[in-house]
Length: 238
Picture 1 (cartoon, rainbow, N blue to C red):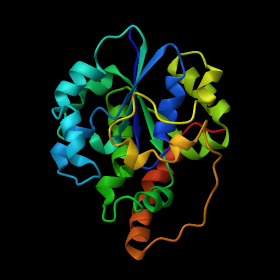
Picture 2: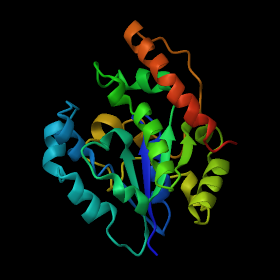
Picture 3: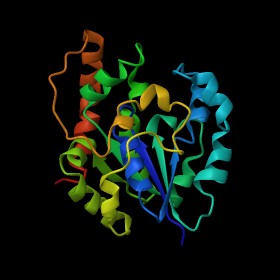
């Protein structure tokens, strides 16, 4: 039976690092944000490299789901995706995949996101969508695995071990490190978002920073907080 893993992340999280970790395994093939062009086309969001992404990827999300995400493969497939990509789509495919929801503290997401995109709303951050997705997956009797990047970065080996157990695949120590630089699977947007990751050779230690936000962004963080608090309570703990 094929195994399809969909990672539903918030932006400015360690989702690409997690994709790199799974890419170290011989039994896994990874895919980088195959619904990005669908999201940009459907939402009209203005992101760095928008025109290049729309040219590089299929814009019809239903075709992406059928021809890429659900395509039969001998290997486990790991799809790194953003939760806010789930717009104007038939979500019935979620019953056929294993879903991981990757969360991060709202103030950390917002602080990092604001360095790349100056104006954004709750819909761009993805935390409310993650909360809604969690409940939708409960409704269809396919509960999500919740992963908080804070705990993952504090103890990658222990958390990945538990994650692999929940995925019913053996833990592989090769997941803990990778070579510096990009990967062939990186999307065309990598130059805008992956600069720091390309300097890494593994998961960077978690450091809680003192973050100063503008009034608008602080209010947004407070609005996101109840959704994050609910989800982190459900996450893998160390």
